[in-house]
Length: 162
Image (tube, rainbow, N blue to C red):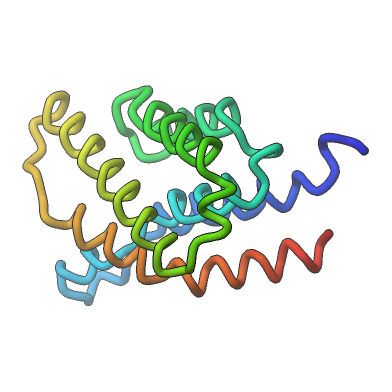
């Protein structure tokens, strides 16, 4: 079995998530709508980390995090570090997370997304003097609320492609 077989699906979903993370909202929407934007990359990466831990591991997560640093103009290494820690959590607990209910998985995802958002905000505060925002908590909550739908959609798509 080739290690690259089926890897294009993982890459395509991660690229789609990265595209959604930088897509601009229409200008006529109020500013608070931006707070409701989920962290698409964390959502998709978390799915692949618990669904296919032998395909998406520490190195893939770290490299994709570095690419995301460049895409978002974040301090270099922040997303790479966060995704490597998320990969460690996913790798360590993927068997337990698979057995848990979707609500419990969503709670774990909420904690992970919140921690990643706080690390990003603190790093941005240290480097660029940007203010801390409550958007981190709302984004993590929306990410967790979308988890059941996104996990089901990604699982169906992964099953069809396989």
